[in-house]
Image (tube, rainbow, N blue to C red; front, side, top):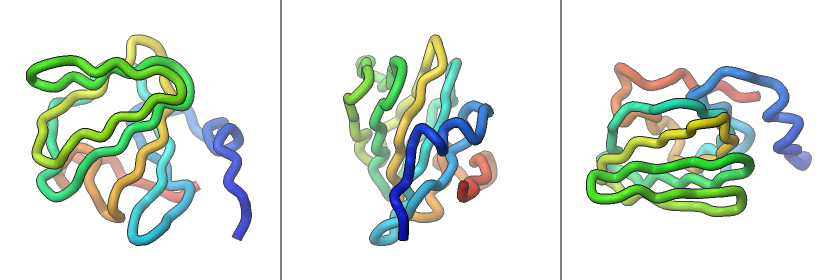
Length: 116
């Protein structure tokens, strides 16, 4: 066991929309992701979707409104709610999801999550 330095982990990759697992607890992955541009509309039928912005600004579009997040702000999208994250500039986000949750809500189109 050792402390996880989030800044160091973020410096290890540059690709967008590709979550990297930095820790696990109670059957959940703790992940970092760099995002820029628009992600696809999706939902998660079995789990909520946790977003904590570390750096930059993230908009989470819902079908009925937008949620704007800045550094230190978090939002949880309830399960089954369609959403689409958008970032005009690169944003760094901490995500928490049950192990094996596809980031697109669909195994066929999900990013391959790796440990760093």
